[in-house]
Amino acid sequence: MNLFYLVAFLSIFFSLLVIFSKNPVHSVLYLIVTFFTFTIHYILLNAQFLAIVNFIVYMGAIMVLFLFVLMLLNLNKDTEPMKSNLIKIAGVVAGLCLLVTLVGSLRAVDTSAPIVLKNPGIGLVKNLGKVLFNEFLLPFEVSSILLFSAMVGAVLLAKKDPK
Amino acid sequence: MEVAFLIEKVVLVTVIFAISLGVAAYSTLAERKIAAFLQGRVGPHRAGWHGSLQPLADGGKMFFKEEIIPAESSAFLFILGPSLALLTACIGSAVIPWGQSIEVAGRVIELQVTDINVGILYIFGVVSLGVYGIMIGGWASNNKFSLMGAIRAASQNISYEIAMGLSLIALLMMSGTLSLKDIAAQQHGFWEGGYIWDGGYFTWNFFKQPLGFLLFIICAFAECNRTPFDLPESENELVAGYHTEYSGFKLGAYLFSEYINMFVSSAVMATLYWGGYNYPFMDLASSAFGPTLAAILGVVVLFMKIFFFIFFFMWIRWTIPRFRYDQLLHLGWKVLIPLAIANIVITGIVINIINYL
Image 1: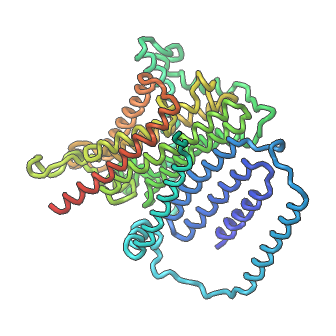
Image 2 (image 1 turned 90 degrees about the vertical axis):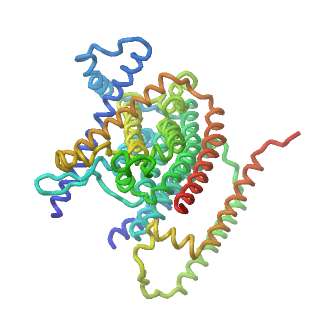
Image 3 (image 1 turned 30 degrees about the vertical axis):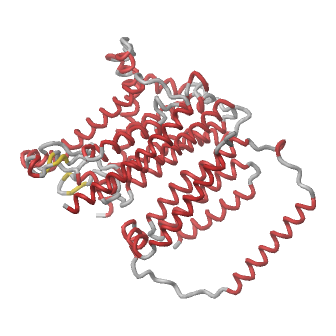
């Protein structure tokens, strides 16, 4: 339990650093550390497959692409667009609205009874595969089609116009 | 029991670290000797017998060189880059089964640090983290050439990771497990089940997945940033790419991590496709010398396979010139990935036919 609180503190700490750091590349690096703490959370929950997939896909691929794009853009003070006061005020109002909503909804939540998993090995690859390809076969295939169409769309956008 | 277990694992980890660092150090000498051999030269031969102390001399030189941190760079990230590269190179060896279990003083010791049941995916994760060392170092150098090197490294690693994963899936479909220990155990011996007309077959995965192995070794070259895929550091267009600004031990860490990566990926290839610690007539050896000696012989065999692959890495380096960048991406996306998918489909059909028979 103590380990959970330490890791949870680190998750929140690094996700705050993502927001507060001025340099976008530093932000992405903090985001990578945040994802790493999520991986530890999954391991604490005995969800090995989810942990390693989070590790490979989010930390190893998606964040590399984020970093790649930010390094190419090379953002700094000179390229930053001027933000008018109106936009800043609108941002503050929107942020406060979100805060009020979140606090309000959290107040309405009761503590539920602790859920005990019937099968503690549910997060292992073998069990997950069986569940995914038997009970949830249709949603699985539908989401794969969704990803596929997104990929085709991206290729179409990247293609040069035939003239 | 608990203390003995801890001591056993600490000793095992220390030995594996020492061996991988030692192999990496002597790979630098081997690289220069093999280059010299292939080009009809002598190679380093002054320090010690035939240059056998050259790695120590190189290491000493790296330690005593001046450390330079560019003034306009981010110092923390500049140091983090090579540290991360060395760290990710070292941790990959944790899930490799180095041999069968041996018995020391009445205690059975597994020659593997940990057998997690997602072993291959762990190696995959470590490989995908490896690129951060290069990217962070290249960006923190605040140098256009270094940045180009870092960006090349990122897109190259991501492209070849996909083909690598797909080439592995065909292997996993056959083995039905992600644990490297089980995969190594499935390739027991060399030939199984009598004569070929009685349904005998090679147990090593290479003979079942030759195309998968070919794809995997190409991707391993790309992931290790070895020639012909060393575009992140191509010295004659990017002036050494991501490590242009590095000097002293931080440069040494980058160079060293490349050799450790080569060692670990050779070990992975040997384990996945070339039978790992298995060798022909191992049951005979086990009954003749006892299981412990036979297992130690297996470790020796695994290291021979690893050294062959390291030699192969170097052989290719001094044989094939570097790809152009568009050729590299063309090969990755339009050749390797379709081939890997075709390999998966063929493997699936063949498995079904064999099960049906």
